[in-house]
Length: 399
Picture 1: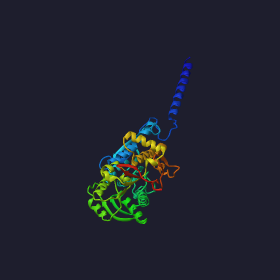
Picture 2: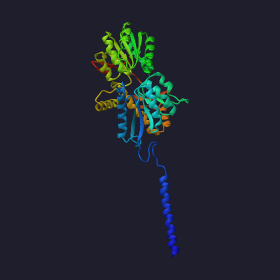
Picture 3: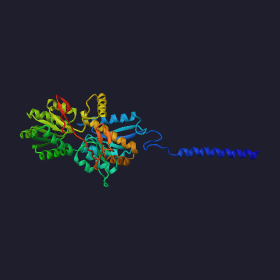
Picture 4: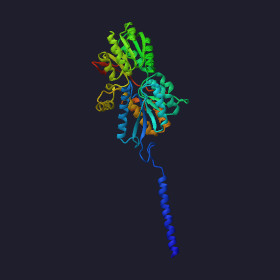
């Protein structure tokens, strides 16, 4: 009897051990999940670097609005592979020194899978060396300086700095042709901000203007934060221009338009994406009328998806859409698509973005299809806006 009881006990132990072992093996067996999924959902983090305080904070508001909308839409659909997305905001005031400090903070925070930013060319140029050295991808929706491509690669030739906006080399030439072929102007005064954006755009515009036969009657520079532009404008007025090319941002551009009018300069104002802000009209007043500027996104030329986005944007923020918000929306979407496909490993995210190198592989967003060349730059069309009766509207486009 004792032998029978003992035998039953051994069998019981063996069965118990066997069942427990099966459960352990089952627990160890990996489940089939996408790269970014975990057993318990965790937040994914992306950095957003832009000026949220200071003179250009209005631009930062644009970037924040676009990223906010994309993140909220993604999270409303369950996040990225079940993980909620959180944007972490970094204020660099469009200042190179501050941007370099912010870049170090971002690079050292390994939670951050990538960056939307920086906004200004000078800030982006200051931050890029850190991102390249530490291996973290940045997609700028707005930085257009031509030299950015030279700073975007590591020693092996891998691109870490991408942008979904065209370069000043492109838009400067485009604007010169528009001035001649559409506006029919002949004599242009050039007024530029003495920074990476202003100089790069000016050089491209002036080079093309001279090549196609426009007369550049003078070039004058100003510094960020200046309030009185009378001395330089007086010199430009002496050249009897019929157009004034303002190569800079709206903060000074609006004041320049107003002061030019007070000096009796009855000229067409021409600028680029840096002037496309409602504060340009507020600062310039009636003098902002008859201004023309190139932009990467125009509602009237957008797809049905783009128009739906614009309607949603304007309902939420109670203001007209701007190209920066649209580009930031798409930049965030492109970065999150990469993270969704390969996980939050920074190297794999870079590889995914770099592989978006044809139209077929490109990101389909509200601003069109974005794909990158070997320098991390994109190829996109430019559109023209104008100010009429104190409001932005689509201008005649160049074929």
